Image (cartoon, rainbow, N blue to C red; front, side, top):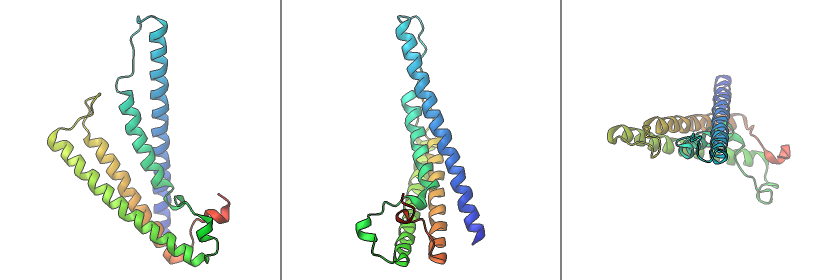
Length: 175
């Protein structure tokens, strides 16, 4: 059990790093694009530098950031409605959370498989991004990897909940 917990923690930290790097790239791309457009405007068109494909860069890294954040914090991802759960015993809440984690495991598997097939199709049919002309295969493959990590981490957390009965309870933490 300790090995699974360490694996889950490692995956969480890895995805926190991936999400953080993705957000930094989003911010830097946006800042560079805004500054370049402002300089273009100030110079009356003399300085013509723009960030080519900035919308694509931001959108794909937003995808990576969101998937990574979902993986990193999957055990805290449930919105608990106090009206329905405040009178429930902790054991029932734990059972429900374990079932939800199994649901996220299934979602992760479905996403991963679909994105893997999209990556294979991107290679086979030569799919590229609209502005940059970059192959879509690495984008789909990395998204499939993050989805697979979601499935793995959800399964580990589900096993942990069913085995120990311990889970993150937002009602108890006041979050």
